Length: 174
Image 1 (cartoon, rainbow, N blue to C red):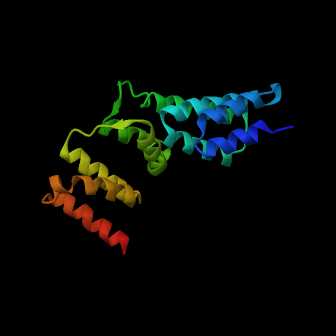
Image 2 (image 1 turned 180 degrees about the horizontal axis):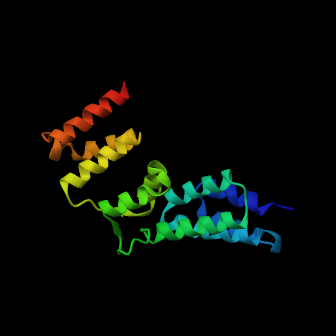
């Protein structure tokens, strides 16, 4: 007898999403319905956002399977699909929202990474942008800071604070 769940995983990993969904549907049994329902939903999500779907799939593979895991993964898919976290705003997080969320549980790095994957960030002022970059550097997220600074160099190259941040990043690199 064919193991449709394994065939579905292989198809998913190869990017054959429709085929994977079919295999998962064929693999559904009462004993594995939570997991299979999640994998079918993940296939649907992959049609919309394949990059994040594959990240969630990797997390699923690395995690111990439990009912709470599937609930957490469904919530992640919902947050990404809605393209925001619930800040009371339609689609964006501003600088104050970012700070409030990022410092929860005193884990700026983890919270900020979760935030940037789940919401659009909208920084409205030069000062807030540079303060955010500074906080990112202070928390050891140099690659993210470099990416932001590369995009902004033409707008900020003569700004004193911008120059201090880039100098700090250069020191960190050595």
